[in-house]
Image (cartoon, one colour):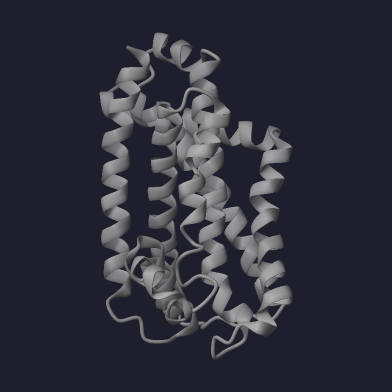
Length: 254
């Protein structure tokens, strides 16, 4: 059996293990699935009537909520990686010659799977309360591609945070930055309404590019250069996270 085949098999086993762990941790699973839906309903029905976005607020807010899903899912990734480090699981896996990439990829791709379920749930509820996305198949595929790239990037970055943290509680705290980024962006209010000192950051941070891409693609409006900027941000963050994870993994198991 070739080395590549072995690594693929190891990665598949690690993904299956992490998915099973997610199913057994019912509290965390329900939080990652239901909290984005609750927040969407909260914003739509409590604040939607007071915020003028030029369209129904549910139509405006859904792309931002989809990125919140990614943040909540990523938090679980960091905690699960740190838990494996602190309870000796990674040492046991290493004695069986399971590669570092397979171990981290298992956590990351399990996070992507959780996010897909959470995204589908958010979209179903959004449609039920008035969200009407465009139906052009190519735009849907492009939107899914942008969202998957973002989820992959933040999940791998959170895995790096998990390797950096010494306790699961600290890992959860480290991922606060990922979960916080959608708020100072165009997710919930137009950037033009923000104070001038905050507007520059909101316009040029990665989340805004991803949200504007999703909003334009899902609603069949012009997207300009937003998808290219979103892809560049996501690929850059992903590359940084993969390298950082490799370095931190070697240091933690040395």
